[in-house]
Amino acid sequence: MNIPSLAWAYLRRSALTTCLNVALLALGTGTIVVLILVGTQLQDRLAKDAAGVDLVVGAKGSPLQLILSALYQIDIPTGNIPLAQAQALAADPLVAQAIPLALGDSFRGFRIVGTDPAFVALRQASVAAGRLWQAPMEATVGWQVAQRAGLKVGDRFNGNHGLSAGGAEHEGMPYTVVGILAPTGGVIDRLVLTPIDSVWAVHDAHHHHHDGDDHDEHAHETEAAQPPDREVTSVLLRYRSPIAAARLPRRINAESGMQAAAPAVEMTRLLSLVGVGTDTVRGFGLLLVASSALSIFVALYNATQARRYDLAVMRALGATRTRIACLLLTEALAMGATGTALGLALGHGAVEMAGRLVPQARDMGITGLQFPATEPYLLILAAALSVLAALVPAIHAYRADVSAVLSRG
Image (cartoon, rainbow, N blue to C red; front, side, top):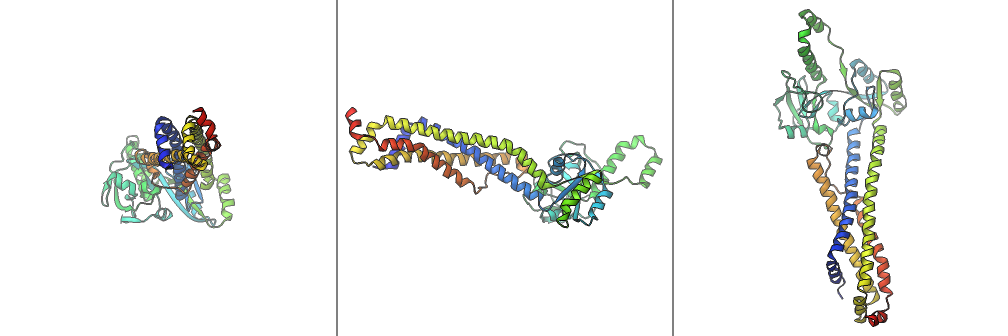
């Protein structure tokens, strides 16, 4: 008796039930795979983009909003802080490094960030073509910016007011592309980097243009003689010693008009909030897997009852009790393996499609081509549930009285 061939024949004979069981298991497995892939990549991406930054300092407001806007460039800043205070932070003995950021403009939806070249080193990026910016109105663009906007070294472009596409264009103040960064898989890939002086110059020109009708010549001369107080959006800090972690944030929050937010603390809060919804969806996926196991059990149990005479004939022709039990186990494992394989393909395919078609997922670098180390456990889980579902029908078939079944016909 060829057990695999016979098991396939029985599964094919009840094709509708078999397909239903496989589909339930595939949906449950696919849901769990999507959560594993997205969750793993999201945590890796958040950790990568926060690497090397111990503290973010900015205007008062939501600490999480400050972290999202300064580190991940996915939220609106809480405001600006005086440049003098940022410089004072950089000179603090507890601070090993301070990198200022100035936001406010964008180019085709990509943020223009005024900062120091140290920001490139912080993100562990390198120049693929050209060089880093050195003078005002020079820009070094991230890999995604260059690819999607079709930029190359020597091109010029105007920024737009605001951090999203559609803002008013800053005419007469073009940036010159002097370099393109190599891809890193991090947030720097979708940024336009320039000196902070560029951001100030563009906004000075913008304000003069819009306020020109309300100021006389004497007023403009006065403004030229007294340059405006400069501001930056935030500062990324790295501690000089562990004691700074206990003293610096408390001092900034209590004694200044700024706020300090620790990326590790805020990301833990964010992931805990997201985790509530993730756990709910994961529970739904596990429920589908459990429902599939129950459905396989019912299908095999009913099949055992319907095939009592066939199984008794096999026993009379020489098939052992063990081979009969193995037949049912093979049917269960075949459905479990097929459903799990389809679920893995479905999950990876859905994540890959989202990574290509959904802008937010594309910006985060989400892909279905990664294979987390936890995925093999899904195969083990599916195999265990399949064996468990087939256990009672197999035992029932193993203990069947052949003579009694054949006598009843």
